[in-house]
Length: 254
Image 1 (tube, rainbow, N blue to C red):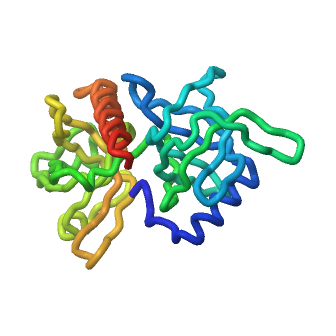
Image 2 (image 1 turned 180 degrees about the vertical axis):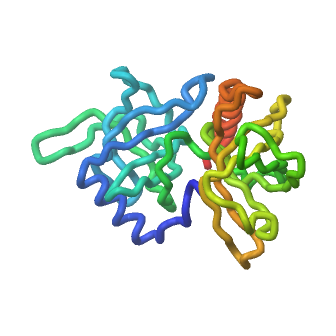
């Protein structure tokens, strides 16, 4: 999963305080006007009981204007672990004290109720736990020719658990995945809510492990180039789907 269990409140305050003491660089994700969710850079400079103070968000050297109560996501790296939390803008503009002599122009964000550690990935990974079941159909590739299915391949049903532009996580019955091996090729077909196009993609199994009572397996698949179904058009559709869901989450203040 992309995001693990939340950290306890006392540890959350300690963690955020340490990040501010180190002036940790962070990514601020929010919706700007009618555009897609965009990313700005900030430094975490300090905090009190209600606010986290950051310098002015910058995007390619340009200052961005924030709105009061604007929802946002913050991602930062501390001690080799990437963390994420939901927040809102408290003060779009304020002076942030660096020391007894120096102040900088900045903004303040609400202290979150929780912070969650997050796996570091090249692409944002969207959880699909809040959707109705998204069923994927899997066909095992040939061991002699990974670009084709053997004639006697047995289809397998899976439930998509999360998705990014680089791959998916899926839940399958352990009885079907008992003899799977990492780096095997699988062909996967599925549909996403609100997207007319059906996806048919070649994937590589990267990892799998039993969860809960051992009857279910969580498997991670990486999307792979396949001459019979060009990858990039599918990736663009997935990116648009993820961006649209991020916008919805930001509007809900999640």
